Length: 451
Image (cartoon, rainbow, N blue to C red; front, side, top):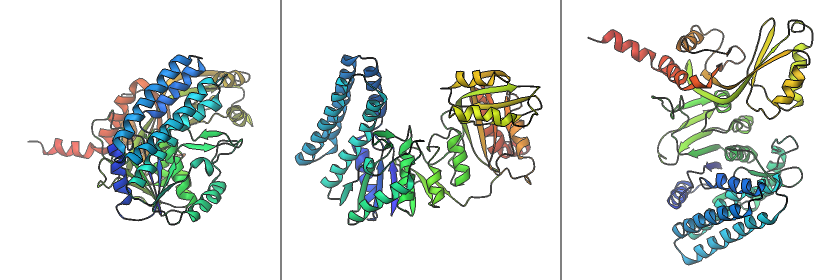
């Protein structure tokens, strides 16, 4: 069995749902299909929630009506028969009646927001399952809210997922296509919750691990993972093979095609992950596994929204327990640290979540001097940075010779070198690295062979 996940753009139009049906039934093999919400739906639902937070019921109602009209038009184009259309109409009526009922809930809280946010996946999977039935495909919808659960630390409970999903799969062993929702889950209180933005990838990996699938496929609108950000870099290309560790580094440090946590469950069960393009299904995409090709530099990713914190204390830096004291502050406020560098008189580190920044700064200032800089970007260069490789880091620094570097992290991982720069230099830095690391030999060859 394989697990195939399709993102919002892949299901965003009726004709794309038609194409997905052809893809998943082509080989006749049993699959679990994880769907995201239709493109734009989650943003629209969160916009409705924002209006309800502001007690602007009229605005929220208008937004709900606009979204309903979109879905009404969608099902008219999705189904061919009156019977299927009737089922689809009943689905959207039921779900939008629930959304409308939340307008009356006062006060509107995070609990209701998460219930609204879940509706996108609940709608798309029900609509798609009815379409599969219309096409004569032996299929079933397994609601993710019946098996996908997180603990008090927002961590998925894989053992629970495996047990509950396993029971459901045994009961539906005769079905060719098993549909479920990405992104949504329940928390320890039994309430509707989610795996955060991009969580459908994470769902697919968790389902794949729980079902011990042979492969997990993530279908998007891009031909695999690129060596750099194609939105702002002039020349990029797909990376055909990459290891779990390398992919995890890239996802965490900004590669948009993959949710940062997707790799964990797949790596745990050694299940290959393949990134494919719904618009070009024949393209090879990117294979992520425990194998990798030998290549100095694989890819580059950038993570924006970084805040740099420098902690200076000439009196205490070399004292026993100083670093422990620093990191206990971040642990207390559940704020992860990305990069760390130290000197004799200072510790510099970065965070991407500033929710508790003021409290963190206040506690640090009790025993040190603190300097904070926002609007920073981490650029992560992934490849083979083992100690016996000569000259690779030099190439990285050469490419960035005209760009101010705030921090450089090397040696903490065999798979990456990271640099911190002001965000205003991001585009310049990514293009410079791209040309120096991937096209330098080509440029040199042109220079020396020019007439």
